[in-house]
View: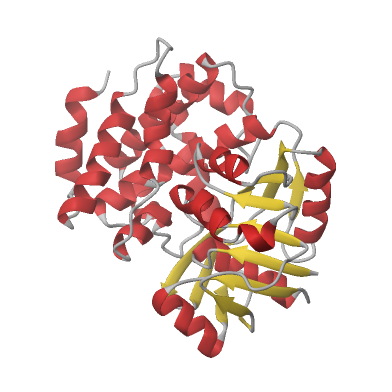
Amino acid sequence: MRIAVLGAGAMGGTVAALLARAGHEVEVTARGPNLAAIAEHGIRLSGAWGEYTAAVLAGPRLTVSPGLAIVATKAMDAAAVVRENADVLAGVPLVVIQNGLGGLESVIEAAGGSDVVGALSMLAASYVAPGEITVTAAAHTYVGSAHGSPAAAQAAASVLNTALPTSVVDNFEGARWTKLLVNQVNALPAITGTSVQAVIDDPRLRRIMTRSMRETARVGLARGVRFATLQGITPLAVWALAHAPLWVGERVPRGIRKYLGDVPNPASTLQSIRRGQPSEIDFLNGAVVEQALGTDVATPVNRTLTDLVHEVERTGRHLSTDEVVARVSPVVE
């Protein structure tokens, strides 16, 4: 099948390379040095799914109408890239691989009459250089109907499953909230300039991360979300995060630490900062703050972490653990 991947960063590049390895004709959109590198030598993939160089068609915009398109840009860029390629995407099913809340909705609005399928990928990948990606943790991808026929989700899963393990979830909104909870691993590495593993291994930073996860769980439950099981995080674990003592909730980041393994993972927010690009923090921790409006749940930790990530983006200076603790401690319960 001819497949388009809009955005060839860490996630999009990984998916594009795996689809090409599975025998699909793949066209990607990219810009700047990344586009130049892909045009010159393809996408070089290494790590948990082995080494492979994918020869793909690449350009700033799509040139041919595909049978399936995958939107893998940052959430704030998703709608714009769909509109930029509207001439070749009319009627084409779209799979939107997004972190956080908001990006999927913007694509649904921009997509016209196309079926839109939501996707959540639990794999961890690092953009190490233009055209070069390392998968630090191989994991499952989950899809669900977001706008259009549920059959579109089944069809998309069938295609993706030829390249990477993928399954359909009925409760996609609940799955999205569980992934939002998992994505609480992003802020502290971005703030400190360290890996997810280093943050979770630090008892003081792990407690802050757990508090941000607790706020996420409480907000979702207050909004009536039925959290879905993802990567071993069950609805019971979410309930424990919301209601049990903090040390019990710490089992969640510890579990994430275990499945990530020992290859340092910077997470996507820190990768964006290192590349001088705006991060998705407003769609992650910022989304928790926004979703808390109208509920009786306070989100001071998520608000503070969002502000600190923006501070690092503005100043280019990461904070030490002592500085982070000093900034967060006054706001915790």
